[in-house]
Image (cartoon, rainbow, N blue to C red):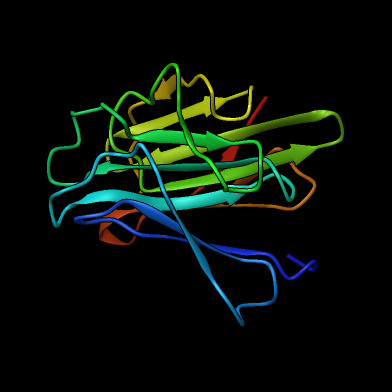
Length: 159
């Protein structure tokens, strides 16, 4: 962010978020309630709406059907992370903020489908079982591009 704030998420034995307020010169680390303990588990993506409101998603990528502790949110800039009240349906490898005018929501995608959250990551609603690995929004549009296995790229448009 232009303010010098940055967040990096990790997985494996400890699902943590690293936070810098000074363009990466120094870092603090925060524990999260995310699933952890396996080499294939943890946080796989982090997004922030502003300097305070953020979301992390992940899970266990080789057991995507497990959806316990696979999404968390923060309202204090990442000092504390709370588990989502309603989790995404399954493992998610990417989360992004989508915004156009007054319309704004979080979109999470993974190899088994996608979900949206309209309340800052507290609750998630499953919308499709079309799986991709990553997603990037088109700034100012309710749209973006998803990329997945076998070189698949798709434009995603929200109504």
